[in-house]
Length: 73
Image (cartoon, rainbow, N blue to C red):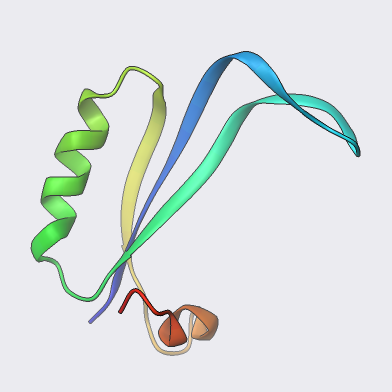
């Protein structure tokens, strides 16, 4: 069963985009084919100062079908 590790980083300066005034936060995710690397990823993320929050979720076949075709699996 695949999993997604997701996290948000916070920057000192905002990321400027054409369509907005800027954001201090940036979202990221890592797709894992099983639960073995998930714990390691979370431990590394929790030690990084710029990581605002992080979590993990199981990818169900019907919940996010676009992720099931990921090259990362």
